[in-house]
Structure formats: structure tokens, C-alpha cells
Image (tube, rainbow, N blue to C red):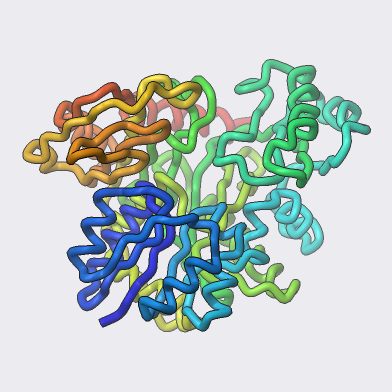
Length: 445
């Protein structure tokens, strides 16, 4: 019997927990900052435990892991990795399949990533400049013609980046927002990045790595914008899809190859800096007329993208993570099911700006035959589920095509009742056609 520790409790972790328990003789333990009733049930059914505490307290987590004889640990979210939870676990001889604080810096300090790519001449990054003070911000924005992205360097839950033409009206708003990031210490005290705005189609590409071997997963496209038609403020992600091949239908195999090459070179550059990176590396990319650029990297599974990739992963996740922790990933053959997937998040009314107060949700489980459900930010009181302030429930469907998977979710949506809303257009024929046309125009330029 193997004891597996998962740290955190969102829908991403629900998906990871379910995938881990596809391996027999594994007990699931979860150290969480709140109750996720679905993950707790999985823990108890497997013979493990569910504990609530501060998920950024590495010392407390390591003590519990030692007490419970944990064989393999997977601290999951960005803030947990930035807090050095892996470092504390490894200090206590607990095997981990996730990066240390130093390695996870590629996510919690955006300037670190840019400087690393620049130092080792890794192609695929935009023109950028890092600022700790307001001096010369205006000049640099003007030098890029005012068409820029403003990025707090620290963690902001995926909601801190603002781009001219989307969240920002013009160069003047960009200058003001850059100042606001510095003044209000948005993302902490790591400063602000100003980057040239890139035009193209964004996609996520995640990979497993043990620092020596890097194995890519299927491409996924996340939908950050809150409203249909890709409008509104940024969110943690309203939904996502993947294609039955590794490559999204409106992109090319060469885009995938370029993105993988960037991820591999980042891992190599970290090694040159004497930093061993083990776990999941996530690249946020954009396919442009001049090739693929890396917008950002994350040091963990994306949410919702994790649900797409784990739905088609045929090789047991526990075995893969074990081989990452023991640096034997090169011996692992990873196989995938050739199916398309779609994920749509149901979120409380008012999200992402001001979500309503917790309200009851009811689920007719008998009508959920075509989809898989994951609990995100929900609360349970006296056996009743309630919304919280963030993304509540994710629905996942698999099919031969993206449109068919999307329709399966539409067929099942009425089984969940409550003050929730979602983006109906994710995975629709119309949205995909828009992506095709956009890339056609981009490649013509």
C-alpha cells in the first residue's frame, strides 16, 4: 500500500485525486485549506485522511506527512509552491513530484523567467523591461507604440495581467496601471513587467519533467475572459478544450514543436543555474505570424486544463509522478486516448467582480451520465452544497470532436440548479470558426 499526499482542495485537485486513485493500493491523504466534500470522500474511501489547515505552512504539512508515513507528495497550487512546502517535505525525506521554491520561481517571479530566457538566448519571448519604480515607464511604453501588456511580477491568481485593447483602453491606461501595480504592490514587491503586445492565438502546453526528461501533454486552450465572445475581465479560467490529436485544430504541429522546445530549453537553463526542476511545467504560449512566443510559465497543472489532459491520460498518474520524484521518467512510456475534451466552469452570479453571497446548489446525479463533475469552490453545510465566491463546479466531457463534447455538457447543464452561470460558447462551432479565421488572418500578415 502506498500513501499519497495531495496539498490543496480546488477542482484541479479533485481531478488529480480521481486520477491518482485509478492506481490500486494507493491511500489518498489531503491537506486542505477548506472542505472539498468530494476529495474528502475519496480520501476516506481509500483509507486515507482529509485534514484542514494552512496549506502554505510547510512545517505543519511535513509533520503530518511524516506522521502518516507518506510515500509520495504532490503540493499542487502556485502559492503553496512559492511558500516552499516542497522544500520542507524533502527536508523530512518525503519524496515529492513538484518543484522547490527556487525552481517554482519561474511562476512566482515573472521577471526571473524573462531574465532566464534572455540570459540563455531562448527564442520566443517578447520585448520587455522590468521596473521597480515609475522612472522611464512612460518612455518604454511609448517606444512600443503604446501596444503593451502590463504584468505584476508576483502571483495574482491569474487575474493581474492587463493588455491594451482588452482590459486597458490605450497607452495612458497602461501607464496608470503600471504605476498602480507598483504603488499598491499588486503581486507583492517584485515590481512590474512591461511587454510588447503580441497578436495571435493563445494556448497552454504542459509537460511532465524530472529535470532530465521532458514529456509533453496535449495542447489545451483556456478561456480567461469572463463573458462570451472573449469579452470582460480576466478570471481564473472559464473553461477549456483539447483536440483528439495533440494539436488544436486551428494550430499546426510546428507550433507544438516550437512550444515544447522552449519548455525543454527553460529546464536546461535552470539546470545551468544549478536548479533542479521536478514536476509539471506549464507554458502559456501564443502562436503569431513570427512563430510561437512564451507568455508565461507556471510551475503546476493549469486549472481547468488539468481536467482536459487527465481525462485522456491512459498511463496511471501515480506511476508518472512516482517516476518524476525518483528521476526515472525516461523509462516511462506515456500514452493518451485520442478523444477531444471540453471543460466548462459554473460560477456564482456576480463572479469575477463581486460574487453573490453563498447560495444553495442542487445536483441531479442521475442526469450526469455524459459528463464528469469536479467540485471547485463550494461549501457544504448540513449536507447541502453552497456556492462560494469563486468558480464552483467544473463539468468535463469527452467525445470524438470538440463540438460534440461541448454539446454533451449543454445536455447535462440542467442537472445543476442554483444561482450559477457559465460560458455557453466554449467549444462551440462558432467559436472554433472564429479561431480558424483569426489564425488564417495572422499567418497572412
